[in-house]
Image (tube, rainbow, N blue to C red; front, side):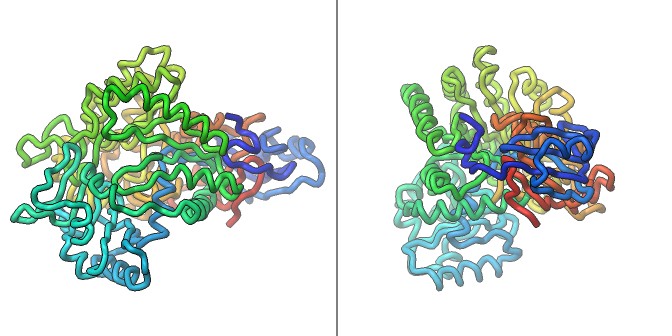
Length: 552
């Protein structure tokens, strides 16, 4: 797929652009000079302003970086822009700071909506009981129609009694092998569904309107562009757990020219994919990839969602959760099936993007990649996302197998949920294996960064801050989470630019002549400031294919 004006939903930009008075940074180091010349969407010269000025016409637009850091555009290697868009159209609970606020938002939305369902998401799991909220509580807010509200992770949902009845979920409904139905004391469903149990709702949840969803995706993409993100991977394209397939909405948005950015997506591997259907699924991915490419949507990757999350005990662990008997979490795919699916995809030239939070899921993903002949692995870009828990013996396997560590850095501090749920479920010994970014780097793994927005913030500088400090932005006092795993600022910045760009095949992600002119200009140079102030950095100008697409 070309990265020219049609590919990736990019329109032709201005003919020439000159950036001056910037601190130029690329691929881990500060460059000599202070200016960049751009023509026809590509970088033509990098260096001192006096030398670069002649590389563009006299009437070229000039952007003054005012001493701010100029970097390659950020690339988000794992984002759910479709979920952001869908949540915005529904009852948006993101950022609600209390149970009262959650309930007021739900009540107000229901009162103002005539839709057959009340849908939405974004509620903070730490605000509600560990066992999950109840249908009775949601019935009091929405008594007249079905309601389904995803949590912030979108790995669980709060449903009311009408929704449970419509889906046929009752006391006799067994838990799926890869999920959990919350239960009351008498065995009746409580109204809390986790991971694989969400699939029970899929047949009854109404389909989203493609045109409306396309417009919402465009609106959400402008937020990414404003933060300096010029390319991304939509982390799961496919129906699952009541979440729609966003492919058609992306196509519509790209066809209309409103969606800007270098957009890629990962086609979801169905949870019920049988061994005898693997070849047909590979053919589907190839066919779908060709169809999507005609719209400017690059989908040469498949998404393998292996496990859930620690907080609902659905992440797949090597050792049991504390005080849970032999509960080691759940997997959507047996290890033997992973070892069939991954080689079949790689043999067809399809990269595999794995969701793995637990250490057992990480190991089974790596075992799947190890089953692929080395020459086939070298032709694709395999990666494992999230990596919340990685066993020490598996850390060197990333480099050995050429698998990129696709981390979401904003997760790597001691949130309230981590202190109250995650660490107590793992224990202090395993907690030292949370988000081992520097161990992966030291072992030679390629690093890429993503946000997992809307689960956490889309702002790259906030994620980079946590990678460097292992504390929340603005918090310089609390104990950092595994501080020995902190990354140097240059390494974290490289992972969010060059690392992610190379992983997604979007170009070199460097400020070099001939590279796509995708840039982010910051309001300061954080390399000269205190590490605890990195979070204060903001993108003020974003350049995509040589065109200024966002200015603050």
